[in-house]
Picture 1 (cartoon, one colour):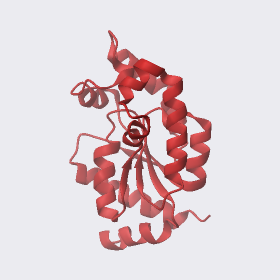
Picture 2 (picture 1 turned 180 degrees about the vertical axis):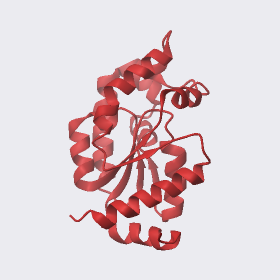
Picture 3 (picture 1 turned 90 degrees about the vertical axis):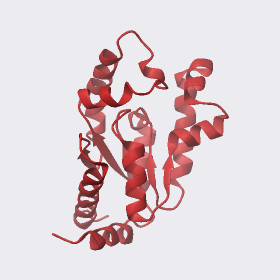
Picture 4 (picture 1 turned 120 degrees about the vertical axis):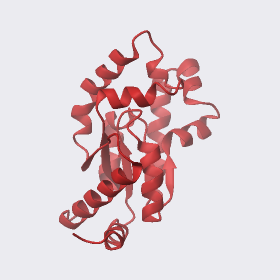
Length: 190
């Protein structure tokens, strides 16, 4: 087993300017794991949702409420395209971003997609703590989340790498992520 420092060096030296793009449902840990992964790899961390809010001058909840999901998704597509033209970074995307074929193709061309997979119970435990999730503002958020799993997980399976997000210390998940990234970059030849 390669030591941690050699793994992180292997990752950063073989990225070739590509970004590590985190995908998955809300609550899977894209932001919390992404920040720690970026620190470990000495790369910038960027949250696409924050960039969308900055570009729009309002919150995602307000974009959904005032302009609708289609306007949000169009802005998301443009912002992610711009971010993928930046130097290597760890990029956390919104849960629906990877569902867009154009975004998936762009990520495939300019990044490495990493799916943080989590089960329904863990996702619900995490998202119930927060009230800013526009897609869950309904009578039965658990049913909505289950529908999102059913709809999105088959598409998320197209990701280059899958890491199970679990009830564990963030460092454990980051360590697993680093190992899988290093393995992927060692075996993947472009």
